[in-house]
Length: 379
Ligand code: COS
Image 1 (cartoon, rainbow, N blue to C red):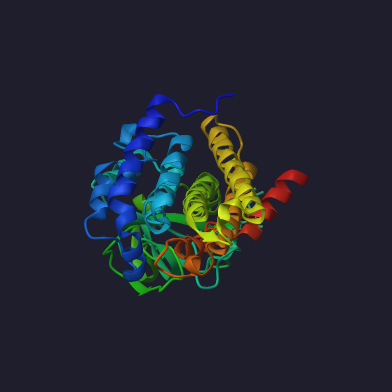
Image 2 (cartoon, protein in one colour; image 1 turned 120 degrees about the vertical axis):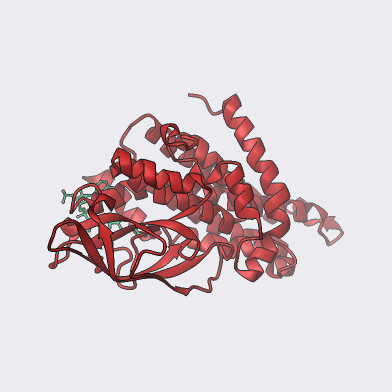
């Protein structure tokens, strides 16, 4: 067992940490306020290869293992979870193609991302959240059998208005159900495909979240990923792969909030002493430290299992669920330690608290994670 990052991982972490310190932290509050990325930031993230971390090397990506990707996302999470979400959505949208794409699809799709473009994963709909199999966007095969026509609306899609390319899940069976779910690659600007309303969110405000609307949108057969009806399995495998990364961003948020409140506790004097010297505050600090260390290890274990080629969907759910609960708990307590100063926007911890909340919701609510964990444990 080895708990240390190797030299290459340490080098990558250092590069990302520098980028976070110079290009993200100084603008995090402004991005949160404005609800968008700082001008030029995307290009800087792309220049470091951060949009293609999951893309295999033979297709021009970094081909990093999951453990290294998680370490990168933790660093980004420390800086701004909205930025981390934007970048991580590219990995989320890369996995369906890694899992089910043929050589031609991989070449075409990854070429787009390698040109510093964003991608998006479109599963969720207004009526389809936890029950992922209930997708009502319809994919009707054309009479000549050469393609499909998509009709329906997706919602809460990260990078919706920014992405150049999308993986869209639609049902090829009129009767619906998980066995009809099918995955498609759709390009921005495809006829019949428009970007709907942009959401005004509580947290991760630097990231872009929109609806996607498909009205008689034609998708050629060569853009279907895998077989008709294979979409549910592709979506589940993708979410398994991506969930530890939500855990990693959560650890980053928790770590940033933890550091901020520790620094504050050491200089905030009440009753003639720094509040860090009070045992009730120390108890909170110790609990936060234990939770963060544990969460990081569980994230890294899930990634390690994936990298070893082991079955890891239970561990992915554990990593995501635990780390996001930790992030919520730690950020709430960081605000508590900082009192009134924690509650105002002059300090970053209230943002961490807002950002942490979505980690318990997206890529499968923590109720769904617990369901997966219980089912995989019991049966
Ligand atoms: N990997 C591979 N296959 C999986 C799988 C996984 N992780 N989870 C389920 N499957 C397979 C099952 O084996 C089953 O296949 P068979 O019918 O051949 O046996 C099929 O998929 C249906 O599985 P199940 O009956 O368990 O599906 P449910 O409809 O009950 O849904 C949950 C299962 C709830 C786990 C799933 O819908 C889910 O993950 N929901 C959350 C969705 C989500 O994360 N949304 C976030 C938005 S996208 S960012």
